[in-house]
Image 1 (cartoon, rainbow, N blue to C red):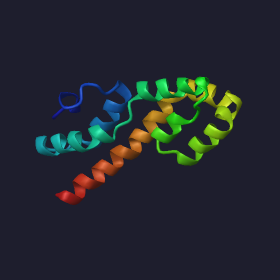
Image 2: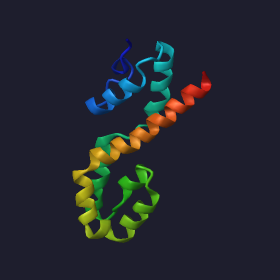
Image 3: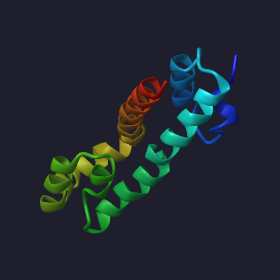
Image 4: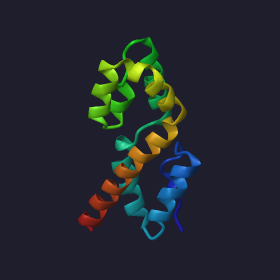
Amino acid sequence: MLNIYNYMPYLDFEEMTYIQNLTKDFTEEQLRQFASIYGPRRKDPQMILITALIGFLGISGIHRFILGQIGMGILYFFTAGLCFIGTIVDLVNYKKFTFEANMKAIHETLTIIKHSV
């Protein structure tokens, strides 16, 4: 059994386990293809945390734009992160938001690979 860690050592445990379960029947070439497609699409949890912290400096919502949540990003931008309460909640839940966005990217990548075979 091949391990996704060999191709993407920067993944956290939860994300690696999730991907490993979905790609357990992949060949080495498919796993390499998955890593090359998913890697650039993946959102880094630390980047989301940093951009959420920037929300306290007056530019709220950047992290929501990065996560692909354009509507929430605009709402946060014009309401100062929903009066900073939304920004605080997002700081607590940044890993959850990032994992949800990455799950979507994982499934899009799997669809691409399955259609290319």
